[in-house]
Image (cartoon, rainbow, N blue to C red; front, side, top):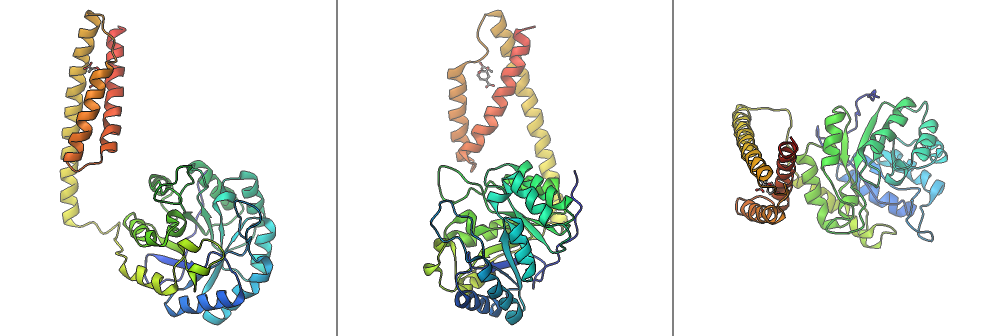
Length: 354
Ligand SMILES: C=C(O[C@@H]1C=C(C(=O)O)C=C[C@H]1O)C(=O)O
């Protein structure tokens, strides 16, 4: 089904990105108000704080719940910022609305559960505020879109998606793997849906926030949601990935925002070159396949197997190394040649079985 969307019009000093900032959790009235005042002073227009916190294991701080909602309301009254929080159950939606929440978001663990999503969507019937849906924890684009469809069917048209990365067992640089190809594909499928990047949850570390914000801008994301705390090292949750309002302001001041639509003469000429080069790649590939078919004919006549592992291995190693010399990633070249080899084997199989 197609999403019926209305534009998300959120306050921002720039066309792009709009920025949502605030602590991971609303810990105390003092912490919420201090962080909010500092953020407002830096020109932030949308405040975030977790009121209900889904934690991996029991026993941790699970948020202050309804107690924190009057603090959020006070942020709005005192600073004029819009307020936003995560909702995971119908009760959360009801309470958030009761205290004047301006934006709701759905967390990754909830998005991953269709029953929870349907219950949330039913509770959202009749509300007219923006709802942002984080990607599910697993890299499943259909599940992400499905969650948004449920909310959209309930009548919520001001929708946005939040890319917060995907869980993996192997922890490498990132807390959650960015797998940028997934939000890129989401944008291709639903071009009018705003996509917001959450560098705090992708990176899991303060130092990664700036490069991730820049990457999101380079890919044309519409907004950012960043965790900011008045005293990050003492945060009750996600201490490592939060920055002070001051640091956040500095990070945002360094971001270069590029435009997607301003096509210049220069880029048109360069794209012509790309078309020409792609034509050459296609011709060369076709030539290579022709030679492979001849090899297939030879194999048929001499009763040889199509797959020649030693030769395949030699090609992969050589091309990988050549790719690196040409400034390309070895894994990328391996993928390209894996694809070429698969097609070459398929074509030879046709010949051998004729
Ligand atoms: C073309 C051949 O057949 C197969 C395809 C290869 C390729 O496309 O480069 C390499 C080895 C074989 O598995 C060959 O044996 O050389």
